[in-house]
Image 1 (cartoon, rainbow, N blue to C red):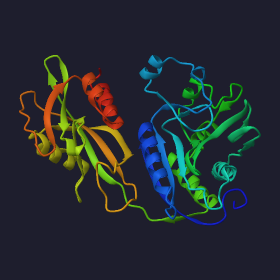
Image 2: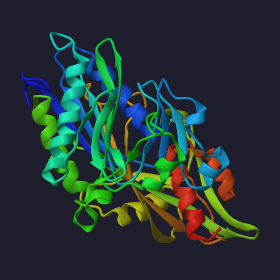
Image 3: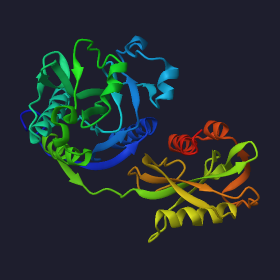
Image 4: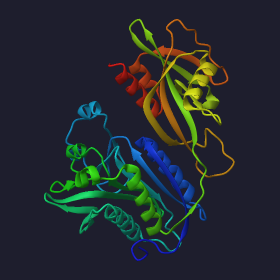
Length: 375
């Protein structure tokens, strides 16, 4: 692939996650772009999966989204404007999103070569599973000729600032294709969108299987000499709640200023040898003096750890993966705050808790609890 992508090997680090909320993905990209901006630091290849989201590129207009904000909210789809090229596109579960955060200075000032390398990696990944995909003149990304006409299997949208690339590609393995019908995807009203699942049915690969192949083709085509990375830390959140006289109440605690000064429920870092459930019970007891009934929320997500809040001994960006639970406690139980972490607490409704939560994962946990309670 060297005549299409890059041919001279360059140090790079691979970071692979599963669910990353889209705003967290933007913060992740910004941190990695600042990191690779310094000469001599490795490029970054990030592979992940987003929550359902429509993103508007620089050329998009509100008319490219056909559904109302209220409707999208009921469907759990958010909307974000970005600085990448292109129009509107969709990201969601079942789609592989790749962010190549590359420093193209020093003889690699050719964004067209980067785009062609990304396209070729997707074409070869499709071929690995028996799908013939190709480029389409005037339409970035990769396309498959179907009985319905050309349909897009993989999209590309990049942003370049001082020869540092951000954003990247989206490759459809098994996303909800109905969501693409709610927009004019990539500005093409006369062309469709497909996925490996829509083309192959039960013979389609899993997200992990397709990501493995795409990763191999990307590291080859972009001539990445992979270097070791710091492993993500692990934490849990235990959304603590009780059955109040007028409905469920969530425990919210205010972090002390040196710990960020935002409202949250119970969270904590996993210690070596701990299972997530053990961490949740330990943190609940240490932070509040409470015990409770733990239930999984079915959500695990990853995010960049802000170095202005947590200090590290070297400049490499750090990441954390959090497993989310709910924790039901007794209505009569007394909260005893750990003053070294939190300065005050309150019990509030699910809606108020959602409003007070600072981070996307915490807000999503409230939504999942609400759904679990049938509200």
